[in-house]
Structures are given as structure tokens and as C-alpha cells.
Length: 544
Ligand code: ATP
Ligand code: MG
Image (cartoon, rainbow, N blue to C red; front, top):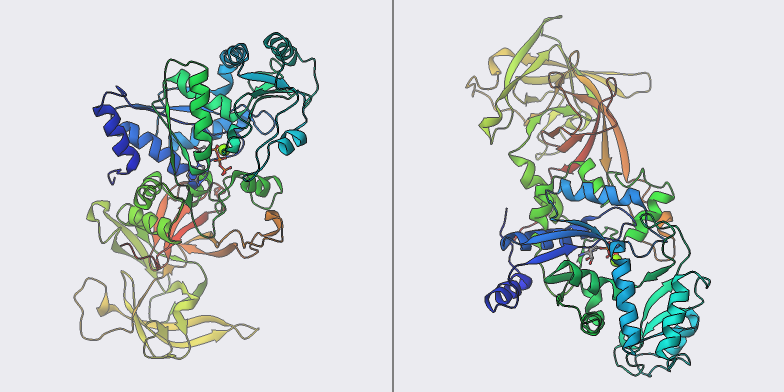
């Protein structure tokens, strides 16, 4: 794997050298409200790989402090995805495990005169907050006594008030140029069943209060988050300082990863799944880790992609084809190259004996001899790709089969097309050809040059298969809801054949010669073989 280098690594080296920290501890803090996507991979790889560089550790912490959107099934899915990427968290924690400790720390702030119970509604809090150009207005409840605040906060906890009726707010500075510092809400009331805490709590800490405390309690040294939290850092530091936390973590922000034509927001991905417009979080068109896995993308390809995309202090948009490039690179030497026909056209070799099948030796991967060899069948009846045949050679560049022309069949013989049969609708039903036994691949025959080389499968031994081919999932349209933006042509199913000799177990990967990389899909049954096209062989990506 490529080495990780970035500004955060440099910072860690400096902090270790200066003695500011004695080890590196990071955390990945997903909210369990959907599945992880390729954007999360940047945060995952960054946290885990950086800690690994220094023999440090990385916790997985579920940020489950917003019970409205969370669900236990997402917890399992996220754990599973992280394991699949090859990462093993030092600890698995839940933000809600700290509710008790945080409640005590909130009371400490009240006692220090740094927090108060406020009766303003959410709309009023918003209005009083002011704007970038105008200072905020102090809440009329700002100067309640410590005793009254302690009592009201306890009442909040004990369920005496309805949702939204009261909040606990930090008392900082309503005139601060940083709006996050204008008496931010620390706790809100939500009467709901929490997926881990049940009905134990009806007050829930806000992210800005919960997160720094979680980091501090866990001994996180470098709390890495994406750029949108830059303006929250003063509040992060305020919470750690004013709660008098022993361990002081440091928040460091990095730019988010964006990929053109790829929706990377859990909210949208969830909407797509909930609306039934995709087949689930593991729909192979989805940019979720589960979707990529099902499509055939390996963890290695994802990691190389993330590392190559680099990391900086600004959000970055990478090249469209970059992930595909790393998928190809990863699979190139790993998988067997076989023949498949996705739009079959029958070929009859008129001069080949009826009933005979011969088995020819084929290398599994010409660039990696270690993958060995296999036998491929050849007989009078073959399938080739429709696209590899036309009646008349259209131009000089055309390097495939046409009437009167001779091509090589991969691993097999030269065949020459002589005639076609039509079906009742006037479509070509079958090509009549002759083969030349002297031209077997590997025999050293060099008296004639064929008009190109094409793939085939032997018809009587071939296995029928379905091929799922994908295109971009979303065609953006700001006027429309995301669920109305699904590209109707994003999933095409082709019916064809693959070589008969292989076993094709779910999860197996292949290169279909001249076509692309494919994975045997979970929908496969004994009599229904299904492949997902992971990526085509064609590439317009230029690595620099
Ligand atoms: P989304 O915006 O997709 O809903 P999120 O940021 O709300 O994602 P979290 O569960 O809070 O999702 O994310 C966990 C971590 O993953 C956070 O540290 C977040 O910054 C990071 N992350 C999410 N998306 C990206 C991205 N596109 N690039 C880099 N990091 C990301
Ligand atoms: Mg988030």
C-alpha cells in the first residue's frame, strides 16, 4: 500500500517529538443513522492509518446522541463495513455511554455560572442568535440563579417538560463574532426510546457538548473531523477547558472528499433506500461501502484510492474515473481472465465435425503466470459478441469479424465468416464460418494475419448468465427531490454466456477479456448465474 503522508501526520510527529502526547489515539465517530459511504472511507483510512503509523490506536465510537434518526441495524452494518476494510478498532464505544458523566459535567458548568436553562423556543433561540453582521440578543432567562438552574435542569432530566419547552445553554458571549459561541444549546429535551438507553433519558446532549467530552474521556489525542467543524473548534476547546477535563484532545480538520456524479450524503442515500428507488444500501450502484463491495470493489482499491487522493485542509473533488482506475489496478494481476459473451450471436463452424468438443489450454492471466491455466471448450457451435460482427467491413480500423474476413478466436483458431442466416424478423440469427486447423493459438502459425482477435464461448458447454451493467445513479436536478433524480438507465441487464468450466461462486471476481471486471452477485442461485460489472476495461483516467 502507498505510504500515508499529510499535514496531520506531520503534526502528530511534532506532538510526539515535543512530548505534548506520548501516544497517538484517534477515533472514527459515525452517527448510526445510515450506512457508510466512500466519503467516510477518507475519515476511516485517515484515522486508522495515521494511528497505525505510530503504533497508536483508533476507537470506533458511535455518535448516538441524536436518537431520532438512529437505529441498531446501522450499528451492525457500520461495524461490518469497517471490518471489511480491514480495520480493527481498539475499542467500540457509544456516545450514549457517557450520558451520566456528561450530565454531571453540565451541572458543573451550571455551578460555575457557565450554563443556564432557557425557555426560549427553537425559533426564538435562532432569532436571538443574530447574524454574521449583527450581535445576538441575550435570552431573558440568561441570568437565572445557579440554584434555579440546577433545579430546572434536574426537572428537565426527570421528564417534567415537553420536547422543546426548555434547553440548557452555555453562557458564553452573545456578541461573539463566532455564532457558535453565542450561548450554544448544550442539551435538548426529546421524549423517545433510544436504541441503547431505552427511556432512561429524555435530555440529550448536543454534538458540540458531547463530542469534546467523549474525546477527552477516551483519551483521544487528535480528534480528526471534516472542515465544516472549523468554526466549532473554539467551542470544542471551551467545553474541554470549562469542564476542567484532565485530558485535553485537539481537534484537527481536514477537507471532505467529493466525487463528481456521486451523491455522498447519508440523508440522500437514506432517502433513496427508504423510497425503494434503489435495491437497498448494498445496491451496486450506491456509493456506500456495502454497494461498492457488492459491485466488486475491493478494500485495497478503496484504500489506494483514498491515499492517492491525498488529504488537505480544503475540500477536494477528485477525478471521475480515479476510483475505477484503482479498481482496475488492484484486479489486474489478481483475477482470472475468462471469456464471456454479453450479447450473444451464434456461430456455426461448418467444417468442424458435429458432436466433437476439444479442450484448448488457456492461461488464466497472461500477466500473472502464477494463476495457472485452464481448459476452454471449442466445437462446431460457438457464441461471439454481436458487436464483434458486421456484414461488411465498415472501415480500415475495424478489427473484428465480417463476411469474407478472417479473425483469430482467443486461445483458439482463425475462423472466416462466409454467410449468415436470418430469423423471421430479418435479424441475423447465425453466422456460418469455417476454421483453419493449422492456426491453433500457440502453434506458431504466421502465414496470414487475421483481421483482429475476438472472444467466444463454446455453445453447448457454456453457462447462461445475467450481466448487470451500471451507469451513474443520479442525474442531478436541483428542482427535484433526490428520489426523482434516479437515472432510469442506471441498471441494464444483459443475457449471455460464460465459459462452462468454472465454478462461479458468489464473490468470485473475473476479468471478461476485452470487456471489464465482473463479480458473481449474491442473487446467484443454482440455475441463475448473475454477474455485476465492477468496472469496464476502458479508461480515460490519467494518473499523474
Ligand atoms: P453525511 O454528510 O454524508 O451525512 P456525516 O459527516 O454526517 O456524513 P458522520 O456519521 O457524522 O457522517 O461521519 C463520520 C465521519 O466521517 C465524520 O468525521 C465525517 O467528517 C466523516 N466524513 C463523512 N463524509 C465525508 C467525506 N465526504 N469526506 C471526508 N470525511 C467524511
Ligand atoms: Mg455528521
